[in-house]
Image (cartoon, rainbow, N blue to C red):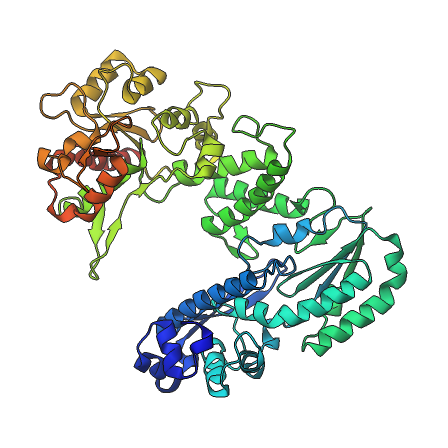
Length: 565
């Protein structure tokens, strides 16, 4: 069903896939405004921004409505062959980076700010749009319902999932009118929410500034907005040019002052365990967001810069800072013990084992009263950023060697961040980093043997590893190695060997399991399908052979807490 066939409130409920009574209850019994949670967040420019976030049934309704509105938008653009490069906020594949790129390296850049942008989208305006816009043309009563569901205290709230896309819908006509003015004066135009940006290489534009500004102001006011004259700026090539907070003169970058501020926050975090963020104590997640944003620009510029190699050994100063932060957060000051496995399927096996045996391992997992499992350890997900910054491929055991190098002085190409933070940080180590390997120590061609050789483990420590199946890798550090037990008299065992014969021989779609990547795909399925099977059936599978590994993880955590505490 699309909006074309939505004529009544019950039709809308069907489109949202919710009971008719629930929609009626939210609208007329509980009342929409009662579903909002109000709080404030700090603004980059200082002060705070009021956020009105929906909760409960209204949140569910707005999330579904957003998805429907987005799908409808995509359908209309495809049907009408529309490729917009005007609006860059709240658009898939668009960002302040794509917004700034349009205006990069221009002679003149003009920024115009719309005052009280979201407040301009009042109840009547939202209702009128859904009723009068030809792509919706909803009956008046239903248009009122759409406005009721998406407005708070008579206007679109900042914090609702539906607000951004509705503003973009309503601003479509406005953007078309502004682009006509821009073309008249040979300007490129983009909009990022309430930020209007124009740019040109025509040096004569400045002579046309007054008529351009008057026409623009008229159109802005005609559309129900107001120009914030305090934020209007005209920037020239020989000075610092910015668009939506990005410096755009040659390369896209953040303001140097912003970068220095973020770096100071990070330095404070490393030394004291806390930092100031606009007058209040900041969180590690907030800082990661800031550093990741800076890195996003570097990544964008790296893609464009094909003249230089970009890798873990060729990082610029900002990337080195990001690398340093990532090590601190995920391997030094992490909130939970970190488990690093050879492959992603290993994580699925261990999680399934813990869920099956959760009563035996309260140190590692707990079940909430609602029936959800919460892990007390974290499993490192090898993302593209870990591949780039730590030379850790998304699968395979060689990545363990590269991670180890950041804990040691073994390879001068790698920074020993563990030593760096141990020397400057007031924060005590709280949690270990545990590397999990298949028990293949006897095979020179397998990862565990290769890793043990790489770290130059002594003979006595090798014997200890064989006996205990676990060992501390660095005496004064938090890095440990754990492997699974040998079963069925085997000299070496993959983690899949810990499952009983019945489980390993389980048939799926007429095929049996094989851990060999080169196995006949017509006869066998691989580790990914097997791991998904284990995950889905964890309640009925025998995980007895996992106990020694899990016991060692508990042991490592307890002993580390004791020695460091």
